[in-house]
Length: 167
Image (cartoon, rainbow, N blue to C red; front, side, top):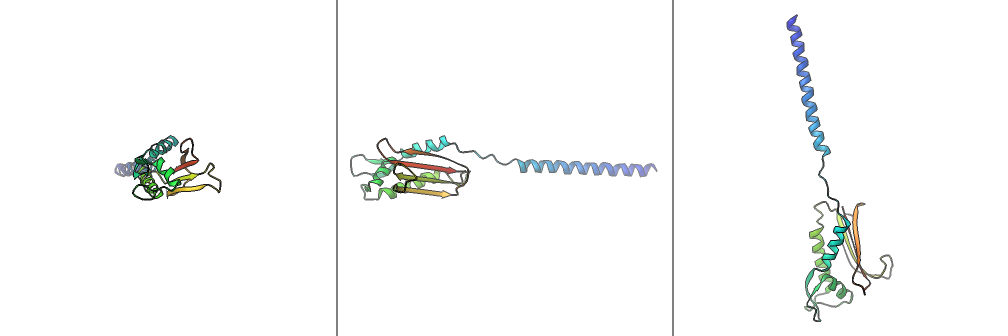
């Protein structure tokens, strides 16, 4: 009778060990499932600083006057006035090429950025129909989560720049 009790006790201990091992494996698996990589939220100051610095970016377009190489903000004004570069390239095409490259390199949609939208409008109000849309660059998906900023180009101009980054 003693051997029968020992065999029953050994089976119960084995069963308890199996339950403990399975529980530990489930807890480890659950821990990996719950712990997702933390996505960094984009701050609006980061977007505003990006816009400020990108307006100072120098292009390879020279103007017809004596300014030399034009910055992005100068290109926007020259684009609105339909002035070509010294080498006869269209300033609007140069502006679009530069800003598309800068936007793609900075707000890479392969990271936590889902998309972006950059809009340059000549006019005081974005919603008015008589405004002239100088440039629109979009990439990726527009989501509910976004950060954005807007800026008026210079004090004596009616050119507004709107940028929104979706994450």
